[in-house]
Length: 231
Length: 396
Image (tube, rainbow over the protein chains, first blue to last red):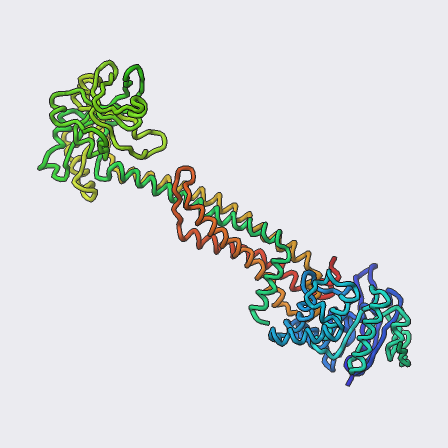
């Protein structure tokens, strides 16, 4: 069974003359363990698609099945549960909670999942260790570099061990070295069997994925399996 | 997610912006402290008034002529001192008083009340003699010109001198000072209760007022429980003795007792307390609006953070409780500190009044402050918790 299955999803913003069709019917299915890169020029609807996949937004029409469950049928509480357990989301702008230590940021999804404090702390440290930031656990986000912040964000996305990792231009705001760090982590995760969806507009980032989807004007323009380029 | 966890998030939220949280708390603190303290001041002044009136003597009745009537004659006073018709009356002290200027060695002092009465007046009016002695029955019979002066008079005329034994001139007549009254608290702020002089009735009538009707008659009952009985007996005797003229329905005299005075004064004090409480209540409300404002700003400012939290899987309920807990904590902390401030403040005398805390005002002020926090905090919190994660995340 597919991890995610999108059928004829459309998304329309606004109404009347100001109507914007961000998605004009996208169908796509991703199997477990795939590493998918989504590319497209700005305005092609890739971020909108990602937000719908991450259950942050709801489609105007069409169906979205996550692990075989129709997300549109879930209520607010169940959606919160899905976001918490099934999906790890990495944002372009990191979106760490300010004035809160890296460790506490990583612990947050576990806290919402109801994990006990000691267990939570242990798992958060393991996740931080995995992204190589064990020694920065007590730093606040504003004391970390952009690359480090994004690694904290990745640790936070991974800490609940979600089936699906969604990354919306995770390297968009990073320099080449930090980009390499993040992509290295994603490679490791892919090797460990995680399903990863990644938005990017850099060809060399997209080249790391096993499947490349190009969006154009709210539709899928191409969808190809590719040889992964490893550095 | 446990309650403890939510509370920890709330504490973190409050401490994230210490200055703002502190100022908000200050608003509530001032409001709560003002309510408790001002009500305490009102209550304290009411109690003070009650104490002063009790000091006047709660077992006395005052009979006063009304409308310049000349009904309180010597005969009327004699008639009141009747063990058969008025068994509950222990003493009757007719009072002839006037304003007078006292002179001692070139120093002038104008006294409000120069009282001529019987020796029983000292007991009935609750004015014990401090130094020296009161005048006696014998002084009264002989019409000796002796006088007992109040503290104010003693300070004005005899600074640094013992007045007992000295001679003063009262509107041309020479009087010997035999005693000084104890300091007495003033029942009303306008009249100085220590600015008086008491002399034998006969001497005062002879030298100053002449043998006309009395200004008033002070009647002392056996005890404060017997005051009502004594009043009934006195009014019966008076109605027999004094003929009410057919044309007017009003009595030419009035009988007052201290408890009536107490009631009127207490009513006044209650009005005063209510007024103070209302003013303080407004400041509490302003503090509450401060909390609402801060919560609105906080929620708006943290909309992005709310979006992040929702994206990480925070249920609506948790977000809501976090912000509600923040608002409640702010108001509860501010309220608690306000209570502490009020309790400390009540140890000091404020505008001459020793505040007496009313326990219910503490409970009320605290409840109101928490209710304000809960109610006004819930509006912005509810709005924030209801946002779709993507809308909250995009909010700038």
